[in-house]
Image (tube, rainbow over all chains, first blue to last red; front, side, top):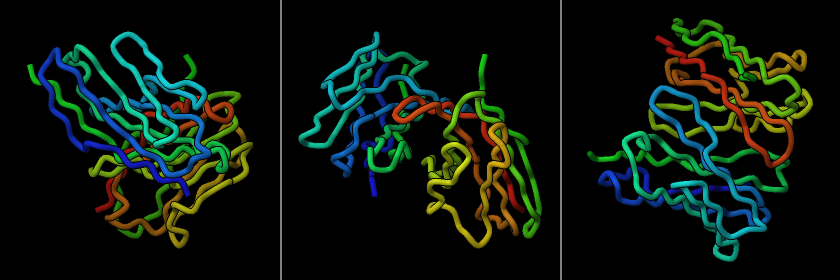
Length: 113
Length: 113
């Protein structure tokens, strides 16, 4: 079945700097890649997603890139702010599994003032 | 404001007791997921349903866990008998179709003593 690996598990960056989180997936048939943000004590919420027919997508300070050949995708946060501190999860939807969402292990991002 | 509703929000129980967690998916959503999140922070898929039919419950310990959807507005996750290692936050999420956002409930924090 699908396996999603996420790195790093923890990340600390200075406020204003950029943060990058990377994920790899195993099922080449996966075609949908969402990113979720989970603040402390809250539910995970979708922040951005990308489909396999595009290589990059941006939404203000966040962007996601996808390399289907290498089977990896990344989340980029620029001009980080304190409210970006959270756990971020990547996910991959294997077409063969009819929408079963397999999450990466999560990255705890801390923004240093 | 459509939301996934989970009850109870918190549950403390003694080892060996039965625990039932409930989830009301967003009206019109036909896919329901159950995830478990431990202190190690990952989101572990336990089971998921499409149009009330179980599609995959391979992540669930079969001897003590069971998941059902008695109707389109209710999903249940039962643990019998409960054990201390079951202590975690259990999230329910619902979605409307393949490859789109999964909306999470606020979770049930279960503590088994």
